[in-house]
Image 1 (cartoon, rainbow, N blue to C red):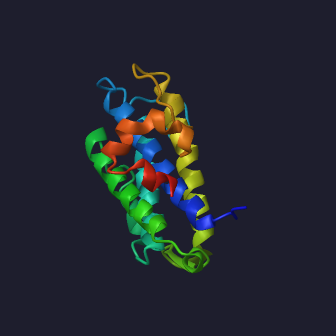
Image 2 (spheres, helix red, strand yellow):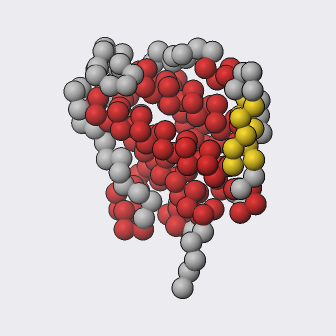
Length: 187
């Protein structure tokens, strides 16, 4: 009987995270002029603000897990992107970094200490806790954007498809666009 492999689980969460971001940002690229920045009801009052928040928080945590010292510089500009295209490029790049980080995980690395530079202090957390927090953060705010898309001209995309073998038929084009293979996703 196979045993639970937390390294594999976090790797699959990273793939799912990147796939969901890819789908969501493709949908946002199809918004009509004015819809991206339009005021809406949510934690952040627009799709633009929410997506900018996701990418800046990703910069902060991914940098910390990579051993960097970016810290609060990640948040120097609340909304670094006014348009979907450059935001998509930035999110895709940080998703690649997060996926690479998870692909390189070992059991020892997963329980290692991550130093997060919080201005006047260093927050120390276990890698597995930071990863779990970051994936939850992404899911939470992507869900808000998904709900906000329902009030636009764009149909919200499927985001709750997890990386399971049976769902391969739904993601073929995107797997190719992301430069992956089904074998890579299922290992």
